[in-house]
Amino acid sequence: MSQNQQSASPSTAAHGGELKWLIASPARVAELKQESVHLPSWDLTFKQLCDIELLLNGGFSPLDGFLGQADYESVRDHMRLANGVLWPMPIMLDVTEQFGGTIQPGARIALRHPEGMVIAVLTVGDIWKPDFQREAQQVFGTTDDTHPGVFTLFKQTNPVYVGGKIEGLELPIHHSYTNIRFTPHQLRRAFAERGWKKIVAFQTRNPMHRAHVELTQRAAAYVGANLLIHPVVGQTKPGDVDHFLRVRCYQAALKHYDPDTTELSLLQLAMRMGGPREAVWHAIIRKNHGVTHFIVGRDHAGPGNDKNGKPFYGPYEAQEVLAKHAEEIGIEPVTFNEMVYVKELDKYLPRPEVPQGMTVLNISGTELRRMLNDGSEIPAWFSYPEVIDALRATYPPRKAQGFTVFFTGLPSSGKSTIANALVSRLMEEGSRPVTLLDGDLVRKHLSSELTFSKEHRDLNIRRIGYVASEITKNHGVAICAPIAPYAAVRREVREMVSGYGGFIEVYVSTPVEVCEQRDRKGLYAKARAGILKGFTGIDDPYEVPEHAELVIDTSRLEPDEAASAVLDLLAERGYIAKP
Ligand code: PPS
Image 1 (cartoon, protein in one colour):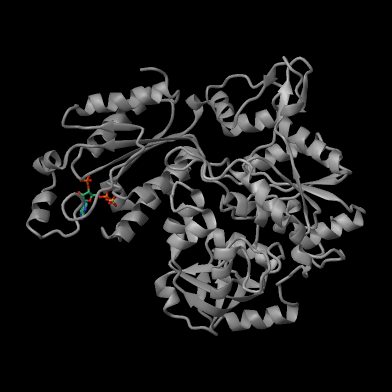
Image 2 (image 1 turned 120 degrees about the vertical axis):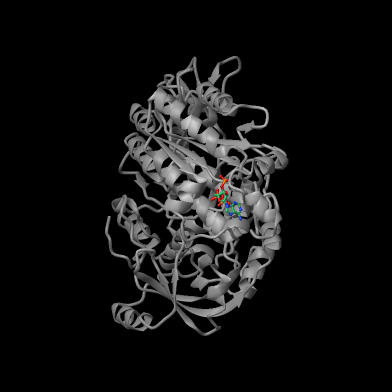
């Protein structure tokens, strides 16, 4: 495929507008480089990098920068820009109060890749403090932070929004799969060169198995179109398998398509898991990439269930909302029924077409995870050998996976003592290398400059989570034992780790009176005397875990018994052999 960035395709972008390309001319880039030396810099987060890539390459056409306040409010409340153009997702640059305080409308900011390159220069239009509760309610229809989009908004988004036009210097650099990351302009050009007029796109964030291949082939045949497999490899749902494994699966699945009619391209999108609104957004993005049809399944971009176990959106809501706006976008949605394997016929059929009395076989995502975890055989009707091999290489059975045991509890609750006992027992067991990340040890070696403010405690826990996730990814054992008093950052750590292996949260629930009586370091006494301020359990809060895998009260259990309880749970879950 041609790497030329400029579009040769006559087809218009979503809503009939022009397809944007916000990278400046070489002469202007040289000027911007000079100018940016003197500008305030903002280091883009991963999510912002995903957003800016699609702004710059035209994937987010008609946007030509981050939304200003009027556009933001209009998008939030009406799914439209202030000029009435359909646009469902607020895209702003979120910055800290400190940074926001240093800039004014009209200022120019150098937006930098974490590796230091200036990606774009932003001319500040508006700066404002958004109402996150309202945004969550309007955009996601809920303020329940079990919803990943709401969680990101409440807990991981900076409090100040900046809007304004951007001038691009270069697209964010990628080091993986660079030969299958095509911009909207490149894809359109390729489609035009190949004479493809009708193209149906398939969005996914999961590995592809036979059912997906059958479904996409059927959809393409049904509308008489070529096929674009367009998986998201930016930010997806927390706990998803990493994109390396997924792309290996896509490449393996691709062998079962006709290369003359099918294209694979990766999309660096930061998903919000916003269900119906997200489906509309995905369709606009796909239209911008030159496709004419878009496959939308059941529960498209679904965030899962709310805190009461009920789905956030109806199963067909995304299809319904997209159908209403499809014409305006200029794309045809292709809805489909679930494809299932019919045993007697040895083939896949849409569920409603299965002849009566025949046996339908299906393996859900959860079931597949279980089969990989316990090493059971995955039937050939379900997937392709190369896909199964790729999955097995990353997801060995649990007995060979890494895991993290994360103790949390009040000071002197017994976390370190149990953690130390557990480390010894796991070293005796000997199946994997074991690393202890005890609260005091981490503060000495990794976090010596941090205080006990909320911000610093969160940073401390994120560091522990990061190290634990790396250890888990490399099939080792991380035993963490910080206080970790705040629920939100504990959840972040769970999400960081659980994509790579096991995560066992152990709440050491020893009552505060018992902890205070023990007072092994004399810190409770200091806190009571007012010498030590902000001490957890005395004048700083401890948010009790609601979803811990295990609760241990050391006023009732000896350390060795407590360690045994953890080992029993690890054995029950298949991570270690039964003691
Ligand atoms: S946190 O909140 O998770 O970052 O805390 P952590 O790093 O685990 O704390 C390690 C030990 O620091 C001692 N210490 C305090 N704890 C709580 N609040 C305040 N203000 C404080 N100042 C010092 C405390 O003894 C912690 O160790 P443990 O093992 O929990 O007693």
